Image 1 (cartoon, rainbow, N blue to C red):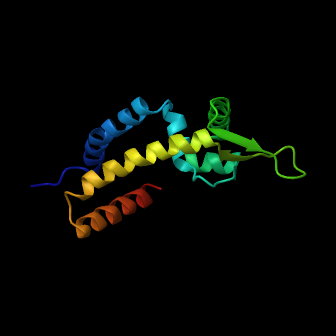
Image 2: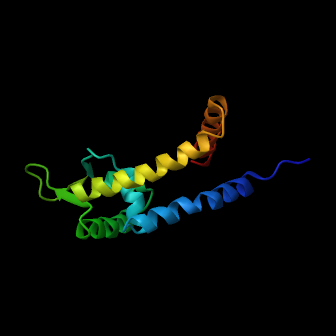
Length: 138
């Protein structure tokens, strides 16, 4: 029997995980772009808009629209480094950290549900294989 193509398996896995994103969007007021922005930041980050774009994996122009939305929704704050009014450092506000905590709770719940059905060796093997796939895809 010929194994299924990787792209088919990735598509099926994404479909099976879509309930989690739906739950996140039901339980939080985040848009998909804001969810990704919350996800790529750590609670104590202070990063430039350029670094935010890199972490998001999108263009700077698209990133600036997301930053503006997250600033206006109160999830991010923008601070100017001392003596440099042109650049900004982005960080999560208390509201952003609160919603990030909720997102992480939902993700942890999903991880626990998967990991309780597998051995530690299986979990490690799957994680290594997925990381290798991510690396191959660039």
